[in-house]
Amino acid sequence: MTQRSFEQFFKNPRTWKEDLVAVGGDFSVERLLYAYKHGIFPWSEDPVRWYCLDPRAIFDLKRVHFSKTVQRKVKQKKFRISYNEAFSIVMQGCSYREKDNTWITPGFIEGYAELHRLGWAHSVEVWNVENVLVGGVYGVAIGKFFAGESMFSFESDAGKVGLFHLFEKLNQSQFELFDTQQLNHVTWQLGAYEIPKLSYLDRLERALGDAHPWIIPTSHG
Image: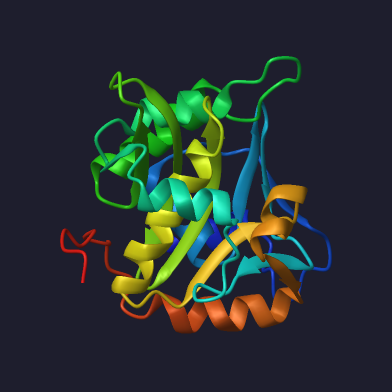
């Protein structure tokens, strides 16, 4: 589809008053990139429902509140951390729900795996001493903007340890905006807060810049 086609498919979040901006479409790379660049994200598969929430939850990249327990586990190097080694498996970990249904259905995994293949989506993997994947986080990076999609832990604090390292890398790369979409108990405890939709869209526009893919830095400095 063309840019014009996407403009017709999605309501303009700057003028549309509802959170739901479109229903239908697919998880093509072109559609997903257009959506994220305009503050829109999908939240279901059948049909695909696209949202731009008001208010919007974000993190200040330099003011994330990790507990002393999490910081201690980072310092002790309790887990091995890797980046982009097991993207689809991290998504599958994030999709696991013991009782509830998940919004991370097979179409999501397939679509975002293609985004990952092309350099627009990234994962952090957290491995225990037995080299078993026990936590992770994934999201979409465009320019200096990161959309945190989901996190999981199969061992205590493993996902938060992954998030700690993600924020470290984003700060190294001088990212300007971390979108966490909607507040929940975990993100609130970590320091996420809400801003009006129009303020979010202004920040997004500035953070996108020339909208290049992110190369995760390999150094620690």
